[in-house]
Image 1 (cartoon, rainbow, N blue to C red):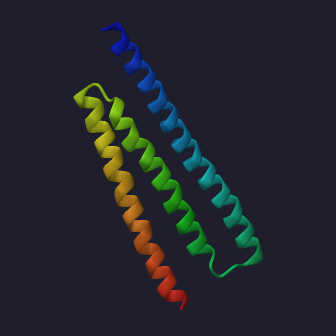
Image 2 (image 1 turned 120 degrees about the vertical axis):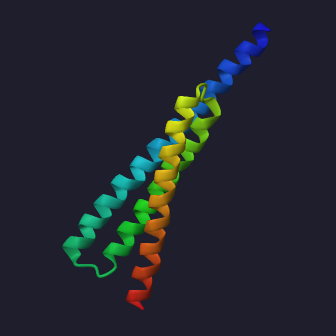
Length: 109
């Protein structure tokens, strides 16, 4: 029984590390995209909105992956409800940003 408890603790640490990696990757992606977008604004790049939308979408997908992975270690229904709401919100934002990307790509053609 104690072995099972240790395996569960190790699994939880691995999942938390994975969540941390995904969250950090999402933040790093967003910061990199912001810097790239500011540089594009200075250069007056006509595709800057598209670059920003794609970067935000990618960052949101990393963050969404972290939230989905976090559901593995949820212990209470209230936590699951909060995570579900966050996943729904981020999924909706990702959908809207992908719609914006398609619209922007059509306008550039």
